[in-house]
Image (cartoon, rainbow, N blue to C red):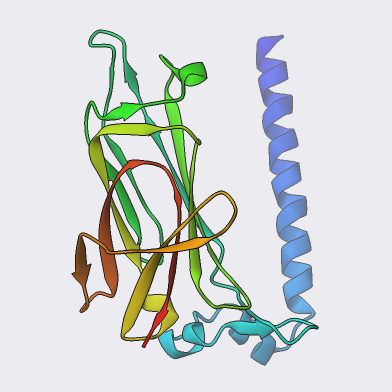
Length: 199
């Protein structure tokens, strides 16, 4: 009986994959060789840098954004502390959380914490907006946050803290790597930041 069930399951899986493969092949057969070649080409760096689209309102939308990343900071039951962790996202931004530094919001205490980082490009101002969660996380040893501005395509950038009302307060970074176009800030809690063009 078990062998029959296993056999039928295997046959069903093969038939499903065969049907899917047939649909893909048929759809590819309908396309010209030129279209097929274009479909499987990897864009060059120059093409990738010109991926901005125009909306109906004339605003530019950069389809490289939004970008995001997640990491899990594990709760170590034996020591009752949180481990270290980090996030890297494609635009070159990174967050490093040291071992035993995280204190989560009270309602999440004692659980593994999923940290998220989101970067969006404002279609009107062109600035990069960085948002982190969960809200209420505190770092007893500062976390290191490298914010990249290479996609702004400018030589220098200005860092702003965004308050709850969306007001911008200019901040001085702890370090600036002009060659790689990123700036370091050490943080003791999650806030929202904006990185904007600078003259």
